[in-house]
Amino acid sequence: MAAVNNPKKCCYCAGCPIVCPKQAIEMVESRIVIDKEKCISCGNCVRVCPVGAMSLEK
Ligand code: SF4
Ligand code: SF4
Image (cartoon, rainbow, N blue to C red; front, side):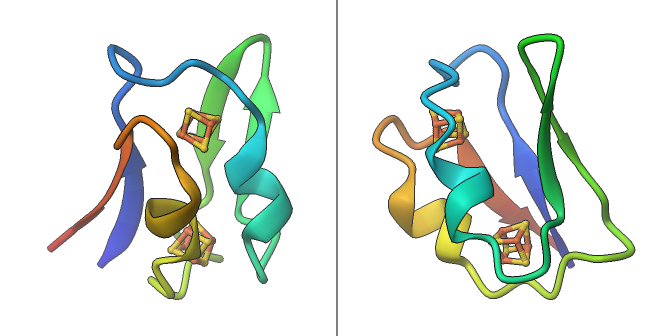
C-alpha cells in the first residue's frame, strides 16, 4: 500500500509533505510526487489534506 495523489482535487497547499514522517512526498513543479518505496502508509497525508486529494491505495 502507498499514498496516491489525485491531481484533480489537489490545491497544492503543501501541507502533506510537512506531515510525512518518511519524506516520501515532494512537490515538483507544482505536482505532488510520492516515493512508494519510502511510504509506510501511515495515513498522515490523508488526514491532513483539506480537500481529500490523498488516499491509500491497496
Ligand atoms: S501515508 Fe504516511 S508515509 Fe506515506 S506518503 Fe502519506 S504521510 Fe508519507
Ligand atoms: S495536503 Fe492535499 S491539497 Fe495539500 S498538497 Fe497535499 S494532496 Fe494537495
